[in-house]
Image 1 (spheres, rainbow, N blue to C red):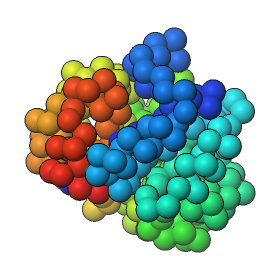
Image 2: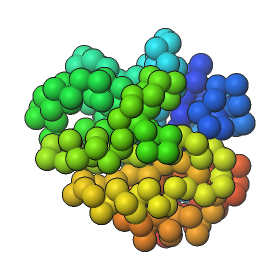
Image 3: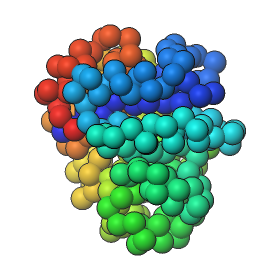
Image 4: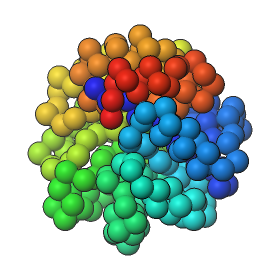
Length: 237
């Protein structure tokens, strides 16, 4: 399993939210490049960049994302409010290795299918969940879809992976939803990326044992609960 630091962008800064709640911002790094340099120096070679504002339909952090993608020697997954072909194309052209799509991909399965045909093994589907229900629009809207049903519907697509974020534990460092990841890993052939709740090294090992191919880590790194060099060495990306 790979461990990948999150670089979440809000108003041009790198932030960490509790439970995806914009009113509960616990960490703020004014210049996102500072965070990128920190994780690169620790030994990470892959980063997960998310435009939180775009996910909520607000002005995008296009400038900071472009500056991040211009940095050499790193591999990036980029998501957050990616809902047009033009945005997908622009991110790949700017240097993104993978593009993460959620809301439109879930609301319009045909769009996701066409996207994966054009960019096989380069598109990641974001399946944000509360319990087992998939949520969209920056975690603000329930879709009524069960995450197991969603994975069954996309199982044959040439996706790079499915990113499962457990919203209820996001940013709380009280442990990931290992049971959900274990169940999903048994239900799909697609690689699973787990996000939300990691608070220590044991959590990463539990996710690995549950079948996750990758874990996104944020709050635990930014607050010092995890030793970044130790994580980068044990779970190299």
